[in-house]
Image (cartoon, rainbow, N blue to C red; front, side, top):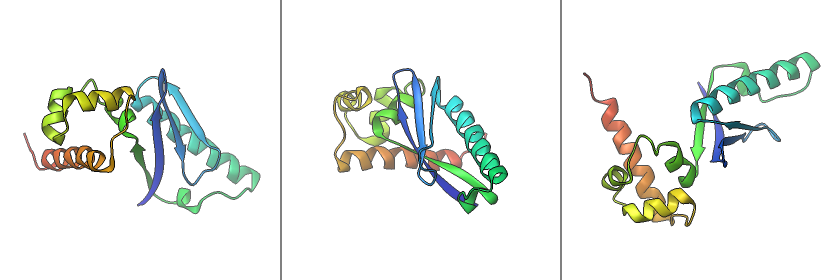
Length: 135
């Protein structure tokens, strides 16, 4: 399965996304991340259908199995999951101070590379742990 990179950013009322291999494609929604995922899928499928119909070139990855890989900046990631993770729990998972996480989430500051990596590694470690759990 091929991976298609999608860059995600928050907006005032929702999210926007760009697809690296589809120049000039920007998808934006008012609402949550699930709505962005749905709209992105529909938009890419529509673009590919039109390109095929018009005989225009498009990335070959869309002819086979592919999945989107969503890349968030820290502000957008924290915004997306603020209803799921409290700042306290994120602090425990990542080792980053709650107050600093709040600054990142509000866009007041951006994490340095070391802090950025701590956040990403902490969330990935949690994801790996959850994959090993059965109920």
